[in-house]
Amino acid sequence: MEDTIFTQRLIQPDTVSLVKQRLPGNEDLFQELAFFFKAFGDATRLKILFALCASPLCVGDLAAVLAMNQSAVSHQLKALSRARLVSARKNGKVVYYRLRHEQVKNLLAQGFEQIRS
Image 1 (cartoon, helix red, strand yellow):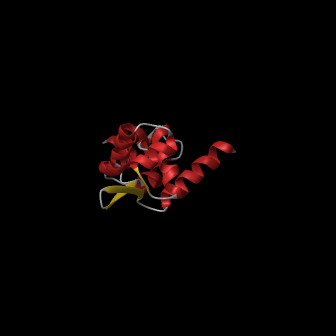
Image 2 (cartoon, rainbow, N blue to C red; image 1 turned 120 degrees about the horizontal axis):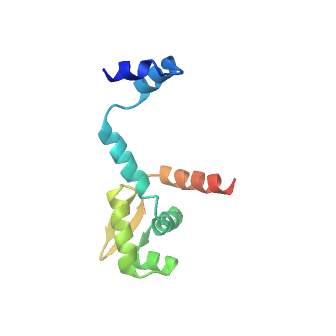
Image 3 (cartoon, rainbow, N blue to C red; image 1 turned 90 degrees about the vertical axis):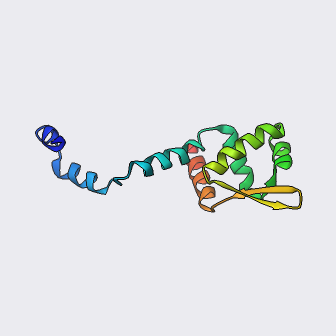
């Protein structure tokens, strides 16, 4: 029914049909993707990700790198962990954070390239 409403107004019906076929039908995938990209929508989280591109770091060291207090860094790390962008590894009493996937470095590099051009 919905298709017949819009069919008469379409400029490129074949293109519209093709695009609709290629869109993932699962709304949950889009919600998950939005949550993933939302993690990149905060300057502090971006700084943390950029720092972790260089090396795994603990909360205290990240706080020193970013000149922030540890609780603020820890709060942002939780958000990045929920978005599955960072992972944690405990070494004795110290927890080290690292990028979960190498592709995060590529996303950051592409983002910087985009704003510089």
